[in-house]
Image 1 (cartoon, rainbow, N blue to C red):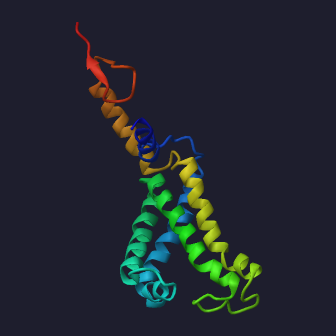
Image 2: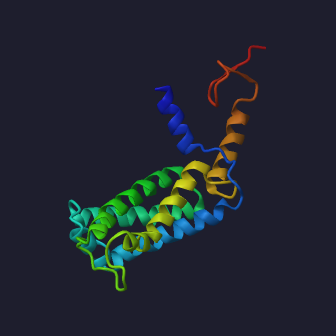
Image 3: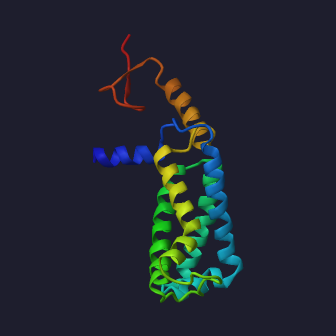
Length: 188
């Protein structure tokens, strides 16, 4: 249970040691996911149609779920709120996207339209077609490891909660010396 608690704390109360410029990575990553999510609702060939061609289970639900995740998660990354939680979701999404689309492109059996210009299958086609997926996977992975940075709503939230916890803990001593909420009143 302690390991699970540590993981949850790592995800939802991240350290804010990432460089200030991390907001640029959040902006780029979030904006791309946001726009891709919107496109899934505007163009059926990018949403339900694409998921149907790829053989995804329950394509209408899956496309709606992924599109909504990309819109909400993209906005949250831009704002820097729940950054690691959405970075986990997007890292998983990008691995699934690469595996579900690029293996068949490599083998020349993709149900999706072939690239317009050579190479149309094989290693170099995959390298060319996966560049955006690869960039999104790596930027989401960076945010997962580095956290949101100091210019984020995650940072503002922690500062606010930290002040609140410190004001409530005034006149208390730590119980076992572990974390917020483990303080007991001091008998005077």
